Length: 636
Image 1: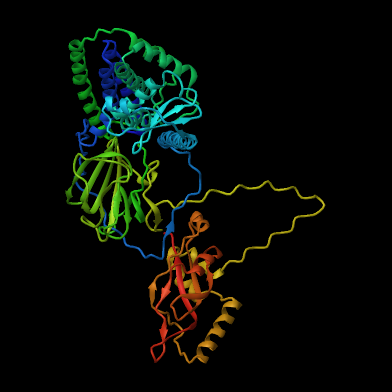
Image 2: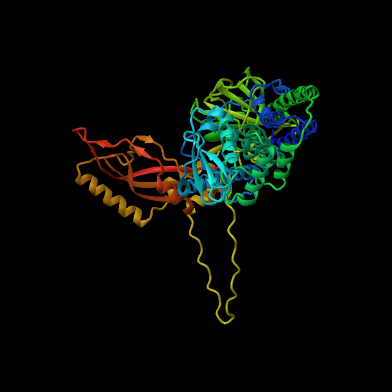
């Protein structure tokens, strides 16, 4: 179920529970029974979400049939030296689900800030209080308290009880010497005896978590009211005079309205009208009907409990409900290389043209594979073509993950975005470890790269022979050309110098086959020749006698980025890189000359390249000058 759906469910469920509890309270329950009813309603708010952890999903989507002849192609392994990295810099408007999540988290953050501010105010108020000697031992003994709390005076506000470890009764200065002070102290002692310091935070939690529902706030107010109504009744019985206690309530409400929002239960409630309700409850002779009320409560529980469990099943299985759009919020892999794209291609084994129904993502065996969205597992089994296969369904969208090394989920299990469903492997028809990913909607295979919001990998490299469309950077805006004065003719543009030998070959051969011909026929620059002559002299001076075509053994091959401008024009090219090799095996002082200048910066970087250093007769690594290394940039 989407986040918006969960919020809507919580809103509707809170409204139903509020109406049910309100209807039960029309039967005139006692304050204790009324508090139990509202506490039950608040607890049932959490029931559907707790039930979803163990209840089976109501909706199970049947697995779609696999093709009779799986079209799982063998993985085409390509050199690390030729790939492009997918990158996008454009801003995307967050999805509705993301905006709803941000709003939900913002509400919880505001509630946490309000609580922290209240705690800070409470501590400051405690620091301004001063002790006072009041005879409270006899009242504590009458109530049954083993430990007598202290009594302190605060400058202003309403009386309240605070401190779980060391409880203290705080009374404002305006009331400490009044005749109704004993009733106020007994009221707070009754709170202490009942354990309201511990239960009040749980009573108020329903509004903190479900802050978006006004019915949750109404439950919180009802719990506050009935807690005070119970204490009013017990205090009046202990003091023996309901009229005197009612006068004490009125006097406190007149002289000591709460001045600050504090995380405590004040003697008087802030909401207007509650004082009249408390006085009416205290002074009226209400005839309770426990038998009729008990039957009504039992009927309400019999109705609400299965509804809560049904909602839990709905939450667990709602990922399989039909929906037009799927929200993706997690990448399938942490990093990967896309080696084969969606569409018709030549099978790497049979050579036949076949429809590739998904994409192949190569990565080290055993890497975790994540569910990109909330869904239900509709297949988790070993197959002939797909190997270990996991299929998940989110509405009408079905995702298949093939070639898994192992499976981490089971049939019918609900998964959320980010759940590890298996690890990358080569369990089916494959020549190397990779993930075969398919996306199906309404029985038709769709291109995973074109699926809105689906992230194949947080770090994705697209190999140039994968058949995938190379991502193009956004076109730079073309500035308006300023008009030139008519009297000054525009200077003719100098012709762009190109390698004639390469141009002649390129029209006949094409692709990467031009490289060998270009390397033999290219015209070396003066800088290249001078650098090469100087390198030979330095090597000779160092006592090194090297073959002209000697190239060191590569420990890590270069991993250049395919230039975006070249990819946009679908240019293939070749480069010769001249560099010095240090004793640490790292290339230095690189110089690149290419068939097209667009490749020179990427080739000269020799990104990620390390080589086995040359050693002398004593086995010590030495520096070598003027090593020539060929590179290719090819798009078929």
